[in-house]
Length: 135
Image (tube, rainbow, N blue to C red; front, side):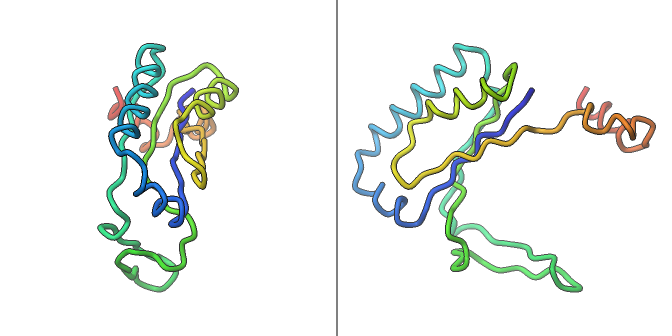
């Protein structure tokens, strides 16, 4: 099973992190990543740049509208993710608990769908193409 561990933080926690030793944060994150690589569970992951560099595409109207960051209505910011391959939800939870995140941060853990989630549509043209694309 694949799970995505999505780092979320509040603007206040992000501001407070500016007073932390950045090299210590890099070292803690690196050690966490290394432990997942050593365990053979890490498939991928990346940090996300400052929200000010992003934008939101809103599909609630007839045509999509675009809003540049920062996002005043958002109370939590996504600032990175990991994708892990584990045997169970409980194992994903155990890895999530080890993440070196500070106060005010949260880690949302979501299972990534696989072909078993679409078994009732196995004959669908695009389900078949997905299998080919993913090899």
